[in-house]
Length: 295
Ligand SMILES: NC(=O)c1ccc[n+]([C@@H]2O[C@H](COP(=O)([O-])OP(=O)(O)OC[C@H]3O[C@@H](n4cnc5c(N)ncnc54)[C@H](OP(=O)(O)O)[C@@H]3O)[C@@H](O)[C@H]2O)c1
Image (cartoon, rainbow, N blue to C red; front, side):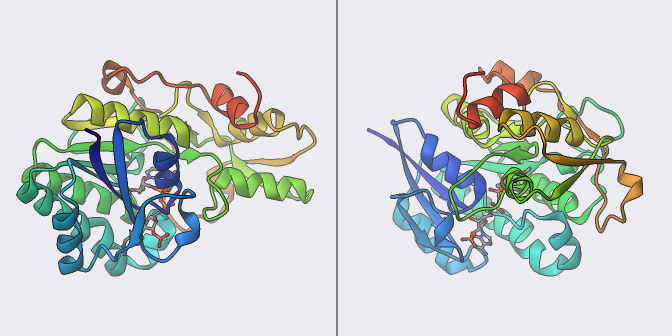
């Protein structure tokens, strides 16, 4: 019998990929909040506000899932900075609530945290329980991680690297934005001193199902192989998508007035997730696949 997976954030970038790429032995039921256009076509999903405790409990009790994949979040660091209280309700309080309900229903919880829990000063980042987040978003994610781990030690917490890809029309990933800008012959500014383990949405979904299939517990980094700078990623993306004339302005973080702290180097140590069978993809492999060519 198919295992039942309740997916929060089904209409988000990651949710879209999870619905598209789920292995056949999982039955997915998702929820969205304000943007039904972000759902993968034909996804089984309903509207739910995760900050509405009673509604969430009713939905979970009616669904009785084997596992809950919690991807819903206020995922924009600048938005979290400008709306601390409101975003904390979703990123922390609603997450803790889900953990409580999972404990009661004996459902596995997989919570997507972020590489922004690290301060980016001592790469490669390992899955330490007490990293040092420097922006509100990272602090909210870490607070939620700790509360989840206390309530539900068997939960899996996945620290996800920055993701790229194209998820239908309802979401707007930075790569989609760059491609649109280049096609209008405008320029993209990209930092040469911001290093990331760029992760494709497809690879993110693959890593999550590795965690689910193995029933893994604890904290896992999930990122792509061969960390590079945003500037190098932009150059690679322009070539992979056949836009070699794309305009890319190479800058240091310090040359730009940043609204939010951006960690410098979030190169991930991927040893733990690799032990579950996850094979990290280089940015070039991921971009070529996305562009429809063989890596
Ligand atoms: N994107 C990245 O590069 C990245 C990097 C590291 C970690 N992460 C983490 O990975 C996870 C997925 O990220 P993502 O990029 O897929 O996020 P996203 O595209 O911003 O999607 C956020 C999702 O949360 C839902 N949501 C927002 N408020 C809600 C509420 N009150 N009740 C119910 N649902 C609500 C949204 O629903 P509606 O759109 O329908 O309103 C949407 O489905 C998040 O936990 C994020 O923090 C993302």
